[in-house]
Each structure stands twice: as C-alpha cells, then as structure tokens.
Length: 251
Image 1: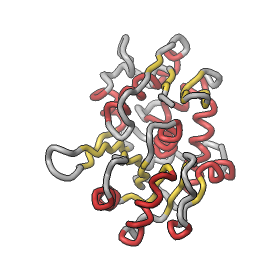
Image 2: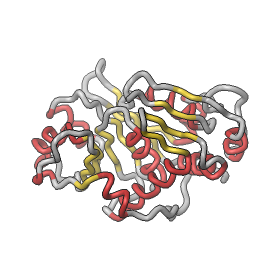
Image 3: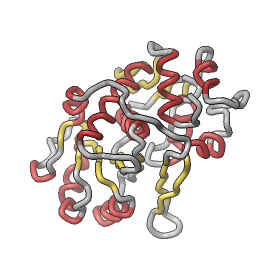
C-alpha cells in the first residue's frame, strides 16, 4: 500500500485486526472484518447497478452503521459519497441530488415519500436502496431495492482495481451563503488537511503502511454527537477509524 487512499487504508486495518470492533449502534456491532466485507458487498452491488469511478452515491440516512458502510463502499469503488441533510424539503433535496450528479441514493425508508414525489424530476438517479427503519415499505413507483437483500446477494470479494490518493471526497456545505455547495477534496488532502496527518491525534505518520502498524495498539473510541450529514461527524469518525478504533453511534 503506497497511497493515502481511504479504502486502501481501512482495508489494511481490517486485515490487521479483523476481530476488533469497528462500529457499534445499540445491540448492533460490526467488527473491522465485518464492516469491510459488508462494504465490499455493497460496492460490488453498486458496480453491478452501473456505478463507476467518480459516480455519486447519496447517503440520505440518519446516523447509522449503514451510513459508514455506504461511505466505505463508495471509496472502494472509487465512487464518491454525498452527504444529504435529512431535514431538507422536496425542493432542497431535488436541488442537491441534481447538483451533485447523484446516480444512486441509499435512504432510510422514512424518507421514501419525499424521494417518490421528486423521482420524475431526477432521471439520472437510477438506483434507490432502502434501509429498513421500521417504517412502511417504499412505494412501488420509486423502484427501490432492499438494502439488506442487495448486500446478501453480492460478492464479498475485493475486486475493485487500483485506487489513488487523488480519489474524491465531496462534502456538501451550506446554509449561510445560499444553496449548498459541494467542496471537493482529494483523499490525501483530507487526511493531512482535515485530520492533521495523524488520523486521531498522537504522532503523525509518514507512510500509509504505518496506519496498519499503529492500529495494533490503538484503543480509540469516539461518539459522533452531530449528524453524519455534517463534515464534523465524518471527521470525528475518520479520526477514530484511522487509528483502528471504534465509532459508537447512539441508537
């Protein structure tokens, strides 16, 4: 591993400590090995559904294990996860999905009515995956597939080709200057610019290989208090994960 690439770094950590806890939400837990495998399955499913490099995947989700599964899956495929403010009304939601050139949306079923109401105005969105949150099933006209079923049917193999430090991370920000805007970062720039090069504090590292070496001693845990639809929560989670630690998501 020679690239400061999110997916490659997290895969290296998963290989070094597959049984250590990566994600926890109430009674639901994912070890590093499980998180990696489930995200690999999702990435394979995205590929089968036509998602390609730099394709955009919208996470229209509350804070959840699935949110971080979607992010890793996108990075594995060299696609780009897009954060969605779940408080948006229909016009704001339509604007963001169109502006970001989104082609796939992963959403909690609670949000299905809003997506259904704007579906006809978003012809480039071709894939909808519904995460079961106890709400009513998505209306048939949305054409959504069940998230869990899609994962179960997909391959767990890491067959995604080369990744790069230049792969994109896009964060949508807004509220004070009009409509949201997508801020584009290279993976490497986020690691050093937003995370300080250490990925969670401590001594900065100089080679990607050191991430897996360092994680063998890490016990970092974090509880992101703000929604994953904001960059602050991403960076809190990333800081813990880049040390091989655990993200605890309030149930």
